[in-house]
Image (cartoon, rainbow, N blue to C red; front, top):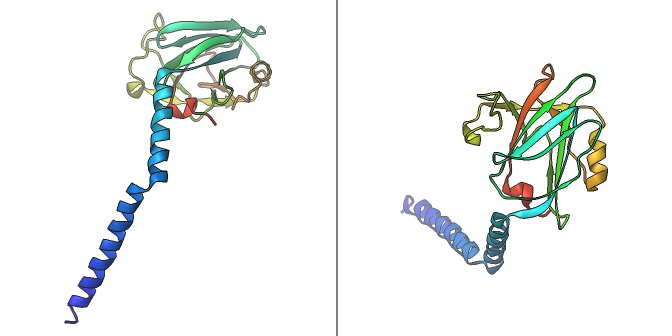
Length: 195
């Protein structure tokens, strides 16, 4: 009889835990939250419209999904470009420096002003292109041999912060010893979620 009591106690705890999980699964508030999240995801899958602000010291070309969308040369700051991003979109930039300070900065701000993303060292990478003639053709992002970007301390990102009325995490560069770098970022759901 002594051996049976712990077994019944363990079964009681297991039943209590399972009933708690079942109750949580049936919780209307949790179900409502899940439905809201699925609706937001479906909306983001259609694309989020906004403006793209880019600046570079000294020159840049930016492609999105293999199509050239912007280019610029310091000290001019290009006009913002209306754009629609979806999760999985691939931004690929070539940035060049002809002397002095250097850095590449970019901000996307949604039309609602509630979603945005910018250059940063946590989700932008540098890579070596397979071909200099078609450097923007990277192939699948998850197969790309990429390295983390470096932050640069140049203040020119202020120009696009003023244009966009948003904060740019940081200006970035690849290998700080290189005068030309190739940068890449894949857009995520988190980038396009309202904050």
